[in-house]
Every structure is written in structure tokens, then in C-alpha cells.
Amino acid sequence: MGLRERKKQETLRRISAEAIRLFVERGFDRVTIAEVAAAADVSVNTVYNYFPAKEDLVFPGGDALPDRLADVVRTRPVGESAAGAVLAYLREALRSRDREIGLAEGFGRVLAMMLATPALAARLTGLGEQMVRSLAVVLAEETGAAPDDPLPRLVASQIGWLHSLVYGEVGRRVLAGDRPDDIAESTVDLLDSVEWLLGDRIMSYAVRES
Image (cartoon, rainbow, N blue to C red):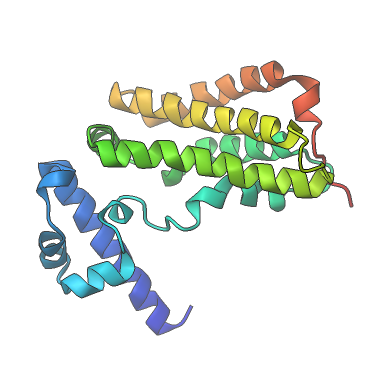
């Protein structure tokens, strides 16, 4: 990464961090873009250049988020199924205490702010639906399913459910004040039960061939 790109990424992170700090302190709807710009020491136009909508300040990298599950499945190794790839991704995210899964310190306050803001709560719901649609397209392409075959969509919905289950479990326990290590360990155990529940039909669907 060149110097220009590094500076761009640093500015993006600073704007997002200052915005979330203000949103948590005062509430999403009570903070203006001008106040975010002042806190990050940039112009209002710079904020809009990086974040076209105010909600994007809470969801940095938003363009890539709807394809998260699809990308995990696209890049899975040979011999692994679609559901197996997502389970492996979630287990690794939990074991490594990945910030993206919500185990970062202070995330409980951020999550509470998001759930208390209708626009952000709706964005979360819509994001989950977009992930499922994007994944269904990949599964249909890989399996050569006919356009009217419901199976890719049904399997994508089940995978989307397990993804939402993990994030919901982490979020519930973060808000309850549980320790990140305890949350991660018990949620990994929960995934073992989920894998059993999904069964062979889904766990063996869309296995990557060489």
C-alpha cells in the first residue's frame, strides 16, 4: 500500500471512529455530519466523499458487507462445502476474537446505540437479507441449478440463519456484560450443535471440486 492509500485509510478510520464515539455519547440522530467533520478535523465534503450516507459511518466498508458470505464460499478450499466454509469462518473469527464479529472492547455500547436507532436497526436487517440473496446467486452458479430451482435459495437461507444466530448470540451476551473470552468459547460450542442440526443434506451441499 502506497503512502497516499495509507493516508486515505487513516482518514477513513479516524472519521468513522470519531463518528461512532459521538453517536454512542449522544445518540445517532443527535449528531450532525458537521460535528463529525469537526471532531475528525476534516471538511464536511471529505466526510461525504468517504461516507455518502450517515449510516455508512457506522458500517465502514459497506459496499463489501452484502457479499461477505458469498466471498467466504467463493474462496473455500477444495473438498469443503458452502455451509462448512461459513462454519469454519465463524469459528476462526470467534477464536481470534475478530473485531468484525463484535468481540472488541466497548462494542456493547455501540450495539446498544445501533439497536436504539431505527435506521441502523433496519440497515442491519437489510444487510442480512442482502447476504442471503448474494450467497444464493453464488450457490446457483456453482451447482448449475435451474432458474426455478429453490434449493440454492433455501440453503443460502439456512447459512444466513446460522450467521445471524452467531451475531445475535454475541450481541446478546455483549449487552449482558459477559466476558469476550467466555462469549467466544461458548459460541464455538454452539456452532457444534448448529452443525449437527443442519445435517448431512446442507453440510454436503455445494462441495468445492478441483
